[in-house]
Image 1 (tube, rainbow, N blue to C red):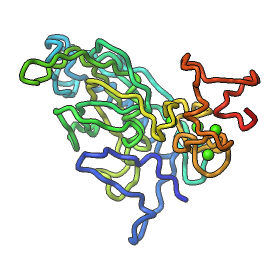
Image 2: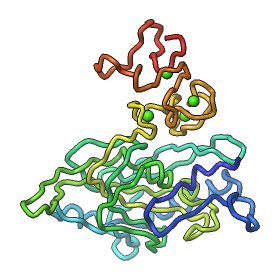
Image 3: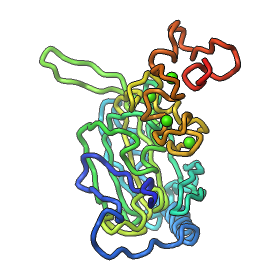
Image 4: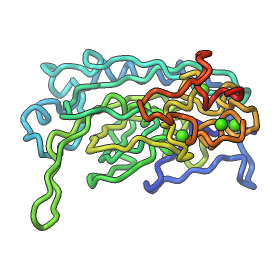
Length: 296
Ligand SMILES: [Ca+2]
Ligand SMILES: [Ca+2]
Ligand SMILES: [Ca+2]
Ligand SMILES: [Ca+2]
């Protein structure tokens, strides 16, 4: 089956892109990932060297105020700090159609605005506002009203940004109006393989993307409701949930969707943490927790 991982999309945005294999139309072969990675990275580095964002607006805004992320060319104001001096690099591996992992670099501005609270994992559900742009500044999608997204249903570069964000505090007045205070903002600039890549439904094929995201709050995701957080069901920690090692009992259902991970007939929820001490139980003390150990 063709890998669809890079194309997971926003649940509620105007974009909804299916895997091309599900269509009856002629499908153009995707470009070579490594060649596209080089071209995208060159474009991104050149962009970061020649552009700045409106960091003064963020610095001057009240902690309850939403700021729209904007970019401009340094030729319009050479005194500004280029984004290349503000980013950190993060390696992200995607799977190609043959199942090979290919490393990509995404660039993150982590401290556009610090939040007041904790950070989600990449797999969690997040309540966010966001603006998506191409490197030329065109915004193909945005939402300035907070909306829930399941992290794993968004494009890869979007959900890899979530751990860089801190959530806000909030107050509810007598009329039920909510005021968020101190939400965190971070920005990712990603190669196209972490976005829509060559999907025929992409707003622009093979385009590097920018997402500015504000985090209001989040929920720890547990896709199968077995009490093990989804992020902990990625056994080898590579942010892919369907590797062979992520299916402990080898029944074809990966652990994050399997309610009996080790296939021993005892539901995971009934053997994960029975004594409720927040440490997975290991009754035979062999180093493998009971919920992943068919022998205990
Ligand atoms: Ca789970
Ligand atoms: Ca994995
Ligand atoms: Ca399984
Ligand atoms: Ca079990």
